[in-house]
Amino acid sequence: VVGGQVAQPNAWPWQISLQYKSGYNYYHTCGGSLIDRGWVMTAAHCVDSPRTWRVILGEHDLYSTSGREQVIGVSQVYIHPNWDASRLSSGFDIALLRLSSQANLNSYVQLAPLPPSGQILPHKNTCYVTGWGRTATGGSLSAQLKEAYLPLIDHATCSSNGWWGSTVKTSMVCGGGGAEAGCNGDSGGPLNCLVDGKYYVHGIASFVSGYGCNTPKKPTVFSRVSAYIEWMDSVSISA
Image 1 (tube, one colour):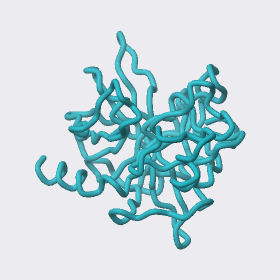
Image 2: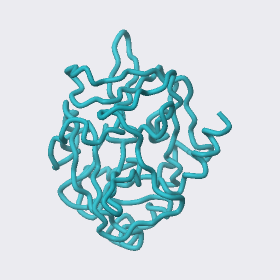
Image 3: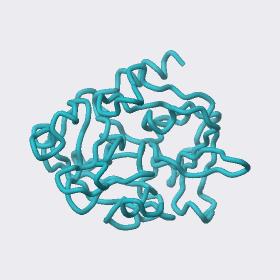
């Protein structure tokens, strides 16, 4: 997250750290959201290579242990069938991870509230991106979970000339466009949007501008969760 501030520990209790194994160690690569006790929602581009994965729930500082963490393996990865790694801008950047055991819900680990299918939020709706991603373009990961205010940018604005143009599809949602942004390492994590006094996960961090994470008029682009509710339901039912 570029800009913003360190979040209060466990203020976003559905946020997870997705980690891959290399040698004897695990490394943070993406974020994600706990959507059921046995399921995590993340971005397809985070998990489209075969690796050994695990998720950490209840995490705040990647490099220190608070005792609130739950470390759970990933038993199965379900990537959206229309995802094409060579065409990021075509969308469908969503995957579900089946956990090898169920999460224990408590005050530090909660399920992400998801929007109703098809819901579109208004321009400038209050939203926050959260993650352990880079704190500047090409910079280092944040040890502690950060949050940044990214007002929602409606599709008409985000897809206009001088903004993202035709790169941004209606199955996506944009946030920010100024000094604050998601960045590499935040991918897969949530765009938390305030609706009627409660935060819902309306986006899955997908991509940023190649010119820099917080390039003006190139807001962070998210997969729009409300476009994929039916697909997610079908995966979890058939699994």
